[in-house]
Image (cartoon, rainbow, N blue to C red; front, side, top):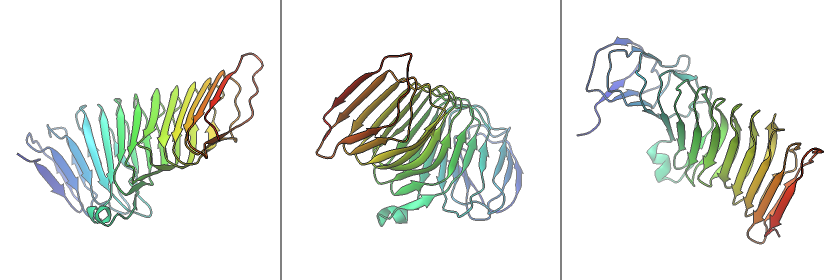
Length: 277
């Protein structure tokens, strides 16, 4: 059996009791539905393939269960979509299959503000450039997986997540922040990263291409930086005060690293530098 889907287009107000509907599909550029979902048991997936230019979909009453949000959206000025239910959340950002078939990268501008209290997995699909802003105010952890043909841009913030990671080895030009995060981990290709948080102690970077850390806001608490680079890992703009372990390993003929100013008078600093060109 396939997924039972309710497709919604245009403007409407809906209050229903259902048990068999598993997916709500918001389709078309005029989609601006208001849904009271208190009686809609079994909703597992929300799919956005269109969005009104002025108003987001308004959904209330979803139960606190694990759920998936799918989006294909290319818009110059996207409206922020709010998600207020609890539980773990998976967000899949993709582009129209015709662009994938043509091997052509396109933006997905979906912008999301989610208030779920579970973990969040954000998946950026093939030939998709994630260009929107994503705020996960109560997420316990955040993992971003990016297809090797994709690109992770835009802004993501998860202030209650203890660990934030970006994986997949694709190119990046993003701002990633989380006030409570103790660990930031990046496995990327090339590009730029701005990260920030008040509790961070560990930063890990694996990069196959040249990466520049363009900003690190309120990160004086960083104690450990670990880098595995195949090109240039550029931390030159980032100063440290609490750093006690710096480990950089390189592979290949162009592996290199730049480190910013360290001012630490009350702690020892252990450095290990291997394999750099």
